[in-house]
Length: 106
Image (cartoon, rainbow, N blue to C red):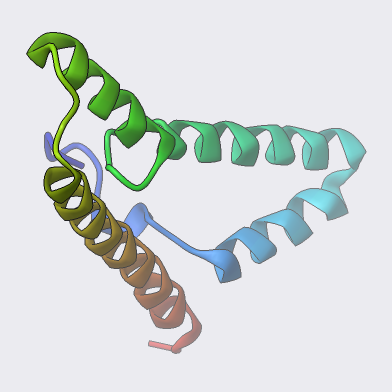
């Protein structure tokens, strides 16, 4: 998405996840397990993004602390958490928006 090779329309939420889970379950156990593995891997990758409220953000704080030589101030950590929360809420909002648009007939 950042380089322009993917669209933000590819971001989807729980409605699309449920649809794909149903379709993969209808194809058989192996397809459903494959889907569950992809979903789990996707959640792992998202969790490791350097957004301060996620685990990747904590790793980012540790990296900054390592480079800086001292911990960040509580104020900086709190500001990062608020920014991370806003980014995550925006991503979730976009996913729900795309899901709702997929329900509306065109």
